[in-house]
Image (cartoon, rainbow, N blue to C red; front, side):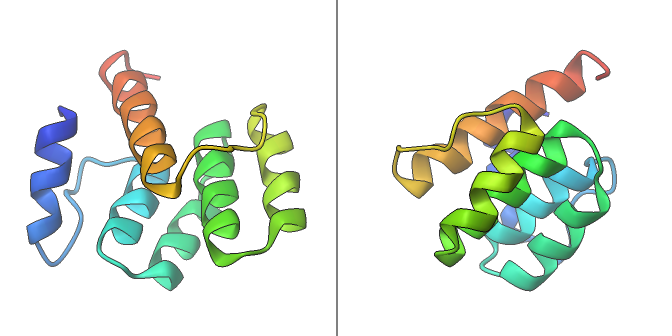
Amino acid sequence: MTLEEFRQSLVGDEPPGDLSLALAGLWWDGKGNWQKAHASAQQDEGSGGAWVHAYLHRKEGDPSNAAYWYRRAGKSPAKSPLEQEWLDIACSLLRSSERGG
């Protein structure tokens, strides 16, 4: 799935069925549903889920919790605008899913 296809899927009521839990979390965030985004990211125990989890806590305004999740993801805390971080995460996770990882 391309970034554009992912963004276009936001018109739907549910995320596409082939998304990872981390991407589904990002999808729900794109829909403005922080709770569903958080629930989905929390189910993904990998680095992608941790990165989305970090982003969500940063967005929520909880920097200490976000810092914990950035460490779990192996990422430095983001300094970019939230919209840019969302795009960065989406691009990275979509590339990873194309490679099967």
